[in-house]
Image (cartoon, rainbow, N blue to C red; front, side):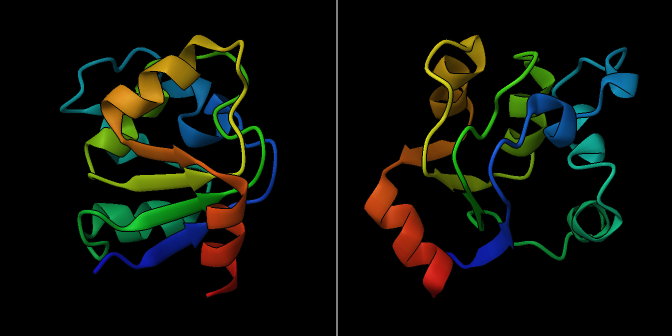
Amino acid sequence: MASVFFKTGDDISTDVIYPGRYMATVLPTETPQFAFADNAEVNGKLKAKQVAPGSVIVAGKNFGCGSSREQACSCLKGYELAIVARSCPTTAPTTARFPASTACTQTPRRSRAVARS
């Protein structure tokens, strides 16, 4: 059974998921090491393989907003993480890529229920 690994707030941009200073790294096999690079605890657990595949990120509204960098998707896919978000920006190309790259669910009731558990 999947467990919640990380809970984020609202308005988590692709810059938070995959910081711009790593934009030169584009290979999907190399991008995972920079997932949430500015959050030492989260990044450290991912790199140390302390997070099981299928673990869940519970996100608030606007998860994946911002510059729409594809590496934000590939770095999460590399860890086989699932995302439950209250909402994702409908105009950003990233939104279209998240479902293809990760298990991404956008259901308000579901994300609130998971966030409480």
